[in-house]
Image 1 (cartoon, helix red, strand yellow):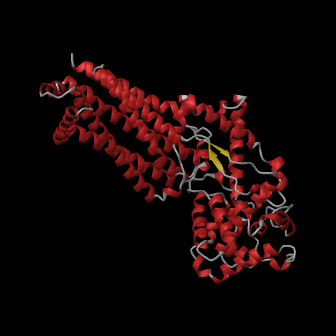
Image 2: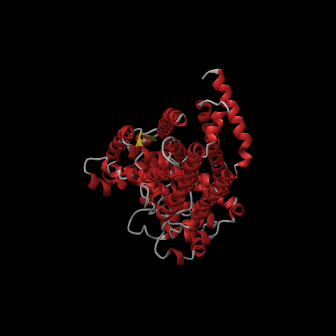
Image 3: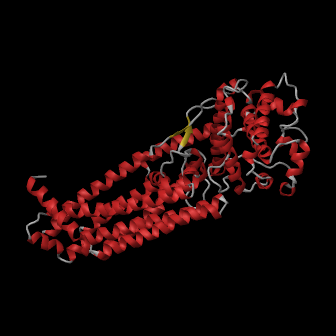
Length: 524
């Protein structure tokens, strides 16, 4: 750009910004769209509090996210039309030419103003969503993080695509047609991710057979990662190594009686155990028995009524469980702290929306809601409701982990098949726009990762494609010492950030091409 054009662009841009105070319709549009997005974002937060069924929660959140994206898209289309077509039709561009401004300066000054308005609405959305996420404790929530934080990438790319396509049409079509086509294209970008979700099922050999098997395969990959995290945390304490033998010998998790309450809440019958053979387990329970006994008042806010809901699958009861574990982890738990932390991270949901596929079964027998937990605890010598709840949680998590490790060969559905599906999705992401739009719609969740991706596989409207594979798989020959389960992590097969950059560059090229059409049009 030569010096004259550069100076003209800066001068005209400055003049246009000084005249913004006279453009009331722009501020009215910004206020309306900003208000709608605030309403939608608050709605996502409120729904998370009043709805505890995951599939419904996802459906409502996705509807509100779509509404927000559509609002941002329409906002971008309208402003692009006003700047690049409306001002041409109203002879404003002709007046600028009359005062000696070149076509490049006229185009770039409007582009800078358009970018400013887009940046303003996106910044507003970011601020809204960060505040709302923090207010609803959403940074620890799978669904809130997905639809308030990860969604920001989709909002940005929606605005960019709206600008690129509308500016292109505005150079040669009238206001009505440009507005109509721009809006339809925005709607199309919201349909493409939905269509792309069906690629979850046709990435394998037998498309329709995969439809029923894929969730099980994905459950396997999630399960392997979860158990690996627990086994890795147990490297020093090695509680898992003989847990099944211990639980069977003490009748605490297996056998014909394993449906009764005592089997899932043990911890006060250590005197009857073989302390020589189960020394590690005895030490574990002695440590936590003493902790709850000596700090009973610190856990007084955990009530027996919480256990009733907890045992009956009521998702709201996960809140006192999280509160209990958070408080417990503040104590000096010695070598047990990594294990308790891993159990908390992998066996309590990241929100309270009933993501039952991410947590173990807490049921402790029949008619749990009618059980007199306080009387049973007193009869068994338990110190507090907190102790009963913790041992229920501890035993459930360790039972499942040890069980799957020892029954790996015939219990787990083939996760290697899912490894191949994820690899095929990665290949499709290179050339298939439907796959690309689906991946961009769900964005990047660096905090919850595979949990979010798994949850979104089971939604009603938009289904996420598989984005993860395991960096390695368990080695059954090492199951005796559990070393084959250490440090297995999910790995993203597609860098969605690269897709965002690619589509940004593509739309930047569209705008660049639009300049040459714009230049010819205003010379007529």
